[in-house]
Image (tube, rainbow, N blue to C red; front, side):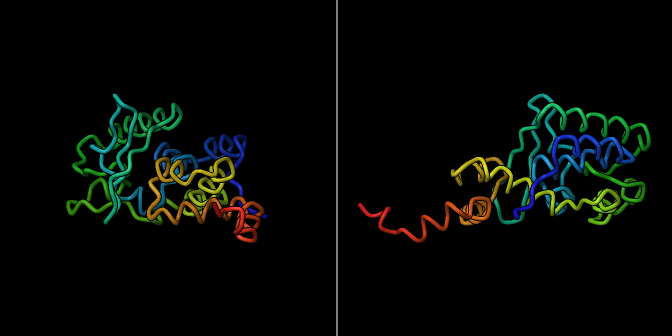
Length: 184
Protein backbone atom coordinates (compact mmCIF):
# COMPACT_ATOMS: atom_id res chain seq x y z
CA UNK A 1 0.00 0.00 0.00
CA UNK A 2 1.23 3.48 -0.85
CA UNK A 3 2.01 5.92 1.94
CA UNK A 4 -0.63 8.61 2.20
CA UNK A 5 -0.27 12.13 3.50
CA UNK A 6 -2.08 12.95 6.70
CA UNK A 7 -5.79 13.56 6.25
CA UNK A 8 -7.12 17.05 6.94
CA UNK A 9 -8.25 16.06 10.44
CA UNK A 10 -4.79 14.67 11.21
CA UNK A 11 -3.17 17.81 9.81
CA UNK A 12 -5.41 19.97 11.98
CA UNK A 13 -4.91 17.67 14.97
CA UNK A 14 -1.14 17.80 14.62
CA UNK A 15 -1.18 21.58 14.17
CA UNK A 16 -3.23 21.93 17.37
CA UNK A 17 -0.73 19.82 19.32
CA UNK A 18 2.53 21.36 18.10
CA UNK A 19 4.05 23.49 20.84
CA UNK A 20 4.87 26.69 18.98
CA UNK A 21 4.31 28.64 15.81
CA UNK A 22 7.74 27.78 14.36
CA UNK A 23 6.95 24.07 14.62
CA UNK A 24 3.50 24.55 13.08
CA UNK A 25 5.00 26.48 10.16
CA UNK A 26 7.69 23.87 9.63
CA UNK A 27 5.09 21.07 9.71
CA UNK A 28 2.95 22.77 7.06
CA UNK A 29 5.98 23.55 4.89
CA UNK A 30 6.69 19.81 4.84
CA UNK A 31 3.15 18.37 4.78
CA UNK A 32 1.57 20.82 2.34
CA UNK A 33 4.45 22.25 0.31
CA UNK A 34 6.79 19.23 0.45
CA UNK A 35 9.80 21.14 1.78
CA UNK A 36 12.41 18.88 3.35
CA UNK A 37 14.56 19.85 6.31
CA UNK A 38 17.32 20.62 3.80
CA UNK A 39 14.93 23.04 2.06
CA UNK A 40 13.73 24.65 5.30
CA UNK A 41 17.05 25.18 7.08
CA UNK A 42 18.51 27.81 4.70
CA UNK A 43 15.28 29.77 4.21
CA UNK A 44 15.94 33.46 4.78
CA UNK A 45 13.61 36.13 6.08
CA UNK A 46 14.04 37.84 2.71
CA UNK A 47 12.80 34.70 0.95
CA UNK A 48 9.30 35.30 2.33
CA UNK A 49 7.34 37.84 0.29
CA UNK A 50 4.20 38.77 2.21
CA UNK A 51 2.71 40.95 -0.53
CA UNK A 52 2.84 38.11 -3.05
CA UNK A 53 2.37 35.29 -0.49
CA UNK A 54 5.40 33.48 -1.88
CA UNK A 55 8.47 31.81 -0.48
CA UNK A 56 11.70 31.38 -2.46
CA UNK A 57 13.46 28.07 -1.91
CA UNK A 58 17.11 27.94 -2.91
CA UNK A 59 18.57 24.51 -3.51
CA UNK A 60 22.26 23.98 -4.21
CA UNK A 61 22.88 23.50 -7.91
CA UNK A 62 19.20 23.92 -8.82
CA UNK A 63 17.03 26.82 -9.94
CA UNK A 64 15.20 28.84 -7.29
CA UNK A 65 11.81 27.29 -6.58
CA UNK A 66 8.92 29.62 -5.77
CA UNK A 67 6.31 28.28 -3.35
CA UNK A 68 2.92 29.94 -3.57
CA UNK A 69 1.59 30.03 -0.04
CA UNK A 70 -1.95 29.00 0.74
CA UNK A 71 -3.89 30.98 3.35
CA UNK A 72 -2.98 28.62 6.20
CA UNK A 73 0.76 28.67 5.50
CA UNK A 74 0.78 32.43 5.02
CA UNK A 75 -1.06 32.92 8.32
CA UNK A 76 1.33 30.55 10.14
CA UNK A 77 4.32 32.43 8.68
CA UNK A 78 2.94 35.73 9.98
CA UNK A 79 2.27 34.17 13.41
CA UNK A 80 5.80 32.77 13.57
CA UNK A 81 7.40 36.08 12.60
CA UNK A 82 5.36 37.92 15.24
CA UNK A 83 6.37 35.36 17.90
CA UNK A 84 10.00 35.45 16.73
CA UNK A 85 10.08 39.23 17.05
CA UNK A 86 8.37 39.17 20.47
CA UNK A 87 10.81 36.60 21.88
CA UNK A 88 14.00 37.86 20.27
CA UNK A 89 13.56 41.40 18.94
CA UNK A 90 17.32 41.99 18.75
CA UNK A 91 18.26 38.86 16.80
CA UNK A 92 20.37 39.44 13.72
CA UNK A 93 19.86 35.97 12.30
CA UNK A 94 18.90 36.21 8.63
CA UNK A 95 17.13 32.83 8.74
CA UNK A 96 13.37 32.42 8.71
CA UNK A 97 13.42 29.52 11.18
CA UNK A 98 15.47 30.02 14.34
CA UNK A 99 15.73 28.47 17.78
CA UNK A 100 16.72 30.11 21.06
CA UNK A 101 20.31 29.09 20.32
CA UNK A 102 20.52 30.06 16.65
CA UNK A 103 18.76 33.38 17.22
CA UNK A 104 21.50 34.50 19.63
CA UNK A 105 24.57 32.84 18.08
CA UNK A 106 26.86 35.45 16.52
CA UNK A 107 28.06 32.95 13.90
CA UNK A 108 24.50 32.88 12.51
CA UNK A 109 24.02 29.16 11.94
CA UNK A 110 20.82 27.85 10.36
CA UNK A 111 18.38 25.88 12.47
CA UNK A 112 19.37 22.22 12.85
CA UNK A 113 17.62 19.26 11.24
CA UNK A 114 16.93 17.97 14.75
CA UNK A 115 15.19 21.22 15.72
CA UNK A 116 12.81 20.75 12.80
CA UNK A 117 12.20 17.01 13.21
CA UNK A 118 12.11 16.61 17.01
CA UNK A 119 8.72 18.29 17.58
CA UNK A 120 7.28 16.41 14.60
CA UNK A 121 8.54 13.01 15.81
CA UNK A 122 6.64 13.46 19.08
CA UNK A 123 3.49 13.28 16.93
CA UNK A 124 4.70 10.47 14.68
CA UNK A 125 5.92 12.61 11.78
CA UNK A 126 9.18 13.43 10.08
CA UNK A 127 9.69 16.25 7.56
CA UNK A 128 11.23 13.96 4.93
CA UNK A 129 8.40 11.45 5.14
CA UNK A 130 5.79 14.23 5.01
CA UNK A 131 7.49 15.54 1.85
CA UNK A 132 7.41 12.17 0.11
CA UNK A 133 3.81 11.51 1.16
CA UNK A 134 2.71 14.91 -0.12
CA UNK A 135 4.35 14.44 -3.52
CA UNK A 136 2.90 10.92 -3.81
CA UNK A 137 -0.54 12.24 -2.96
CA UNK A 138 -0.30 14.87 -5.69
CA UNK A 139 1.03 12.27 -8.15
CA UNK A 140 -2.12 10.19 -7.54
CA UNK A 141 -4.12 13.05 -9.07
CA UNK A 142 -2.03 13.78 -12.16
CA UNK A 143 -0.18 12.09 -14.98
CA UNK A 144 1.66 15.33 -15.70
CA UNK A 145 5.26 15.33 -14.48
CA UNK A 146 5.52 19.05 -15.32
CA UNK A 147 2.81 19.75 -12.76
CA UNK A 148 4.90 18.04 -10.06
CA UNK A 149 8.05 19.81 -11.21
CA UNK A 150 6.37 23.22 -11.03
CA UNK A 151 4.54 22.57 -7.77
CA UNK A 152 7.43 21.06 -5.82
CA UNK A 153 10.52 22.13 -7.76
CA UNK A 154 11.47 18.53 -8.51
CA UNK A 155 14.65 18.01 -10.45
CA UNK A 156 15.61 16.17 -12.60
CA UNK A 157 12.35 15.41 -14.49
CA UNK A 158 12.79 11.66 -13.99
CA UNK A 159 12.18 12.27 -10.27
CA UNK A 160 8.65 13.46 -11.10
CA UNK A 161 8.13 10.36 -13.25
CA UNK A 162 9.25 8.10 -10.39
CA UNK A 163 6.60 9.65 -8.14
CA UNK A 164 3.92 9.24 -10.81
CA UNK A 165 4.89 5.59 -11.36
CA UNK A 166 4.94 4.95 -7.59
CA UNK A 167 1.55 6.59 -7.12
CA UNK A 168 -0.03 4.80 -10.07
CA UNK A 169 1.73 1.45 -10.40
CA UNK A 170 -1.20 -0.18 -12.20
CA UNK A 171 -1.04 2.41 -14.99
CA UNK A 172 2.75 2.26 -15.20
CA UNK A 173 2.77 -1.53 -15.50
CA UNK A 174 0.15 -1.45 -18.24
CA UNK A 175 2.17 1.13 -20.19
CA UNK A 176 5.41 -0.81 -19.79
CA UNK A 177 3.85 -4.15 -20.67
CA UNK A 178 2.16 -2.82 -23.82
CA UNK A 179 4.85 -0.85 -25.65
CA UNK A 180 2.98 -1.28 -28.93
CA UNK A 181 0.40 1.22 -27.64
CA UNK A 182 3.05 3.93 -27.95
CA UNK A 183 4.05 3.13 -31.54
CA UNK A 184 2.82 5.37 -34.33
